[in-house]
Amino acid sequence: MPEGIDQETLNRAYVRLAEYHNEDLPEGVPATPPEAFAGFQVTPYEEWLIFNAPDGFTNQTFLVSDQMVYESPGWESYEDALAEARTLKAAGATRRPEEPDDEDDDDDDEDDD
Image 1: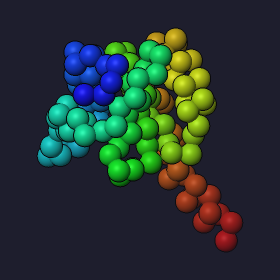
Image 2: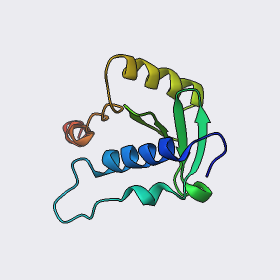
Image 3: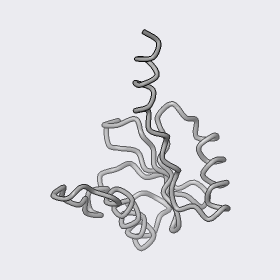
């Protein structure tokens, strides 16, 4: 268990991450169990637990609180991620908003021909 984190808090974070990953799964795709996150590197930081995939498997970082999961791409600094996560959490969000779909960009390229 990571130092400075009690097991109950860690278990709630595992459950919250699993809920996050299992939202809107297509039919037939198996759900990710909370235990799947036990191998992640976890670091406490203020009101957050910061989850990093083991061995750098992905370059994503997850900031987890009881109310929110903020998925941070690897290129985003911790300071920027924490600032945005706090702002969203204060506004009542439970996750980072989805990025707009880039499918329309392909149509724009066809018009340039």
